[in-house]
Length: 311
Image (cartoon, rainbow, N blue to C red; front, top):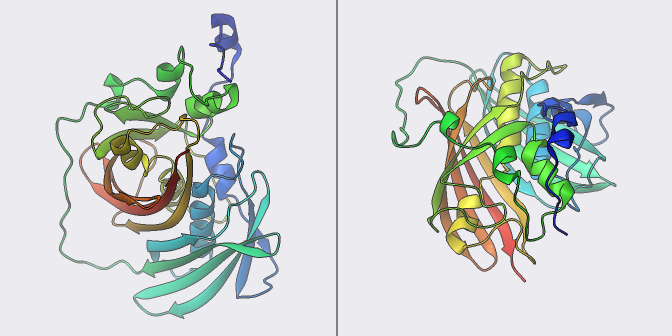
């Protein structure tokens, strides 16, 4: 059903959005391992969909893997498969297998379990810091800055339509922990802008990320990037197909995911997430994304395939 726009008084009474959902997702509790070398539990965060947000699993598995590496190496890549959907607000058990610890590189396998079944598998790779030559790609200088763009809250304030409910509208406006600003425009209710196979999203936590037990601030920021990457990486595929999130009958799900971390990823300031659709066919779509700082440092690269079904 359509959401009713908030009155000014109701808007004034609404609490300011925060990034707490992100650090809550990253908070793991050590557990007794049942299958491999280490184990942790974590809880998927609230969302208005039948199943949990995929970024919960990506980030929680990354956090579990990072907590198993104690010699200073940094996570440089993670390669994952989503096997089953996870329940919202429910505990996931992450079992970590130590596959290799070398002088320069280490590898971990992380499996996520819920209700006794495997729902997520990740191979995480770590590297020791060493000197080397450097190269980085750039983003288009013509991309408008975040200050020139409406936030999701501003964009959706007076809009209704499609399958958007009051709950999903509130989630898109301020429930995801990050302020997201689209170029050329969002695909919440309609495709705002041309049906092109690319877009960009400026993003920043609503407020300073809170400390996360067991992670350094640098590890927390990296895991936060893994958390937020899944929200919009398939949107260029939707855009080029002329699909919007609130289209009746649209069903999407993450299938597999890869992420490479090229440089430290501070999450305090605006980052630009440059995205492109690579392919779409047979009910699946492949999207890529690259994270940049405002001064053009290329931080990370994402590739994700997802199921895309329409009525």
